[in-house]
Figure (cartoon, rainbow, N blue to C red):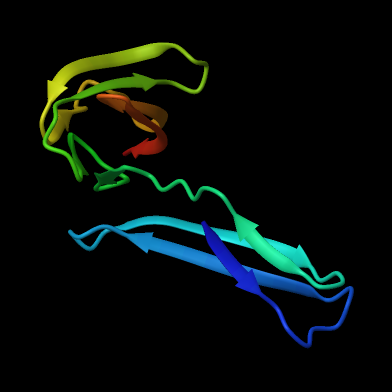
Length: 125
């Protein structure tokens, strides 16, 4: 749990907090902004802070994307077009996915690794 105690703040003021997380390979995992309106005796806390478990690069991409995570488990990846139609599915992905069969456009990646999953946008050019 993250807890921030505010002292000597004007009641009704808006405070903005930005949190960023990174994993050991150095890629940015998450950046999130929270806005909070100051009240009497304010204490701001958050029970969970979810970070993206997967780093996908390059993005935009042409023929191959790299997918990295903190685990060495194989990934299952499904790629959907903007109409929700599955256009590519791959299992047992270790680090790269061939996307050369995809037409240029915006896609949605659904990645699963064990009990963890993430959804990200992918631009194919």
